[in-house]
Length: 550
Image 1 (cartoon, rainbow, N blue to C red):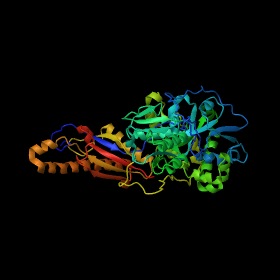
Image 2: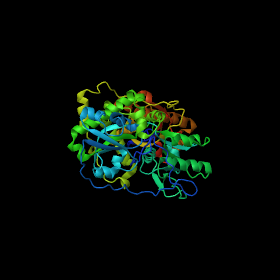
Image 3: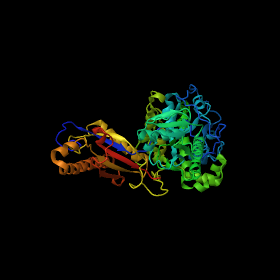
């Protein structure tokens, strides 16, 4: 039977389209500056709006690698003003090298932490510093020109970055043809590109607010940083010029813009439950290769510092606040927006074994896809950066044997619900057996499509999916001619059943093959009642709507 159910005509396998609701991520962040930092005034034009930045068309080139001169038993590491690095500060007892630090007491070396928002990748290459901190997407962006290795994950950003839009916009797909303000090569650029990628929206960049937006793409206009992006959107709302649909920014600007909008703007999503912004420790490659015991000591100290902040945050607020020149209350508030990773979470993050959080390989590949070959040329495999020996050695010591994976959804209100709007939806094509709801699992495209859904659920703890099955309506006129309205109604019921069964087949495979909790997957059959377009292939589909907790 065909999807319009003349169920005996097609002898070929039927392409089955899946629209999946996903949270996207896609952009690379060249610096992690901004999360939890002091608001930047930005560069403004005479009219008071932040100045529009020139669109860069390639990743900046880095200085060639040089040796790191390890001297005075001090390891210099650069961090930015972000609570996610609290574990390093706690383990070090502050920013300055100290014999009272865990690094010196347990391993005999000192660490100097420097807070800076400047780009440090060339300095790392040149051996001016031994280490730095960044997010996984940056590694994909710079590729082999970044002379660094990753020995450990630091944590996840959980709510520091957010997408704010006009109140009539309820899902990412509605940003088609609209313009969003962002900051190029920052985590907010990565965030919106990832979301657009998963919603099936190509990106178009604009050089000015007067440029004509592309009607079939999501349009991005860039300013200096995330705070300036929020300011530009707020200014546009106030003026009523209606040039922007929203902005991607970070706290506290997210809340500031929404609270000051007079009900004209709302938060569409944050990364509170979208674990796509993952911070990692990176070390100069030569330094790491020549000093494996120091690397092990750095990782162990980081994990111990993370444990101190996770288990007893109040005891560490003062040292964190001093390092960033925050108040104690600011430090407590900023820590609420991060998840500091422990040892088993680290091991699962790099192996891809964690079921309720993003993985190193998944985020890395998402960044490669989100930017495309025009910006990221010939990227190395994610394994090029990994150095897991320190984590393996620490696990064997049993120092953190009491720890377990503890990443859970953060509920700030109602949970995901099929009565609410999904964050987004996306098309994926499945190939079914002729006239049946049996998925052809020998077809690798089907396997990849199932894995895409699994990845979406894994990247967002607590999220759910509604699988809405559809069939095409191409044969309705033939049915009417053959047997009148009564026959059309009979075939409509069969179409409804087939569409539900095909959605159910995807649900069954996700549960059996990947161990997805059945409670996270709902199904419904819509038959031919909701065509997506005039072409039959467009309407043989399952619409997967993704509901995230916010």
